[in-house]
Image (cartoon, rainbow, N blue to C red):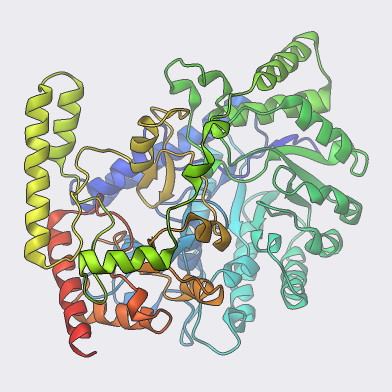
Length: 620
């Protein structure tokens, strides 16, 4: 084996968010599909050549996506929901599934495991006619080959695809297992003809969750079928975000080339290495999810420990997961106290190459010096502000029952109060105003006059629409997390630290999210709002099971889609939420802030939302 290094996947948005800008230009009709494809090709080429230049041996293709890799897999399988099948233009249909259109709501979108990335949830209907569409995969493979790169092909594995899908059918999504596996079988036969040797990274992250024997049986069956198709296909099964101990015995016995495991967030993986027998191991020791430099000494220690169970020549140094979850390049950041500690995708790629070289070839004096300098940097640490928080600030005055009684008396809100999350559309004029103010073109007084005018317009619209609790529209801020962070001590925000959240939506983290209900209860908020417009009542069921007693505003307006829901659609969303929540504790609101939408979408949507609430109130 000559390969020594591997990057699981690379960010697709581009160094300067080129993909975001191109997508939004295409969606608004400013560029044709041909130009969008050209811009996407340029991003892929730059990503591939950068990884090659930095010294990565196994570079991914098919990790690029215009919107989401799960949605790409839906297209690959022809698992198109019935409401989208009539659209003849393939690209428009693709984006319609992700974003919705006037006559069809978008497919559900939810968090990718415990990250802030959102994936499109496949909808598997009984009458689906699965058929292979491998065009994207084959095209991107040949693109990389023309650049002198022998890429590995990234694919979502069949078990994870089905396990993360939803279906109304009895027996769940695995009702379709044989039909889906047959499409993968057809695909692998095509891939076998691409080259003398083809590496396929089959991503099966589902096995970091609690798995039962039936899931393991599906994994075993799928690998026996796919691993037996051709000797020239090297299958590397990849799992990340936690340990996959339950699956390692099956992986060790399966007819596959290797396994990629996360040793950053799944250190227990090391306990199952003896099960991998003669397999190649891609050891994920460079964190693909945080923005900090690697602790070389710690990573080398892990690699040495792994080499006690797996021969060194069968170990690939790798990222723990795809670098999709980190920004593009820290080198673009201005100088600061924090910058030396930052490692984004480009820097992490270089770290993988460095670790791979010294692990396999040994260390020179200069390498030892670099390792020592890195250890010194990390040992200096940051001062924590947590200890300065006074205990009395962590507990609210009065119980929720006491507070809500006073609030109802003072505010006099009706049943199912309507509101929005906070932000209203950020127009081009508003962005230009903030930019010109920062440049000194406007005085502070002129800036504030324009901001107040926008706020007045927002408030007037909300009053006319009949919303119960008004917001000022937040015209003075940019990205929400960045805005609050800039006003608080102990936070550093990057200039170019953009990470894809979904589609063209990019945010500047780092932001850590948690799904732990105990944490939400400890907040003791009077009202919390939750994104549920696409996911329905599944998340709300957790609150009911845990007997959460405070008020909740489940989202009924999918702000990630440009379409305007009808009054009837809003009614349906509200009634479904009332199946889980008591109407005395429920608010009605959009999923999220309206910053990314346009006024011509927001105005009619909120008016329809209020009309739907008024109709439901009249029935009680």
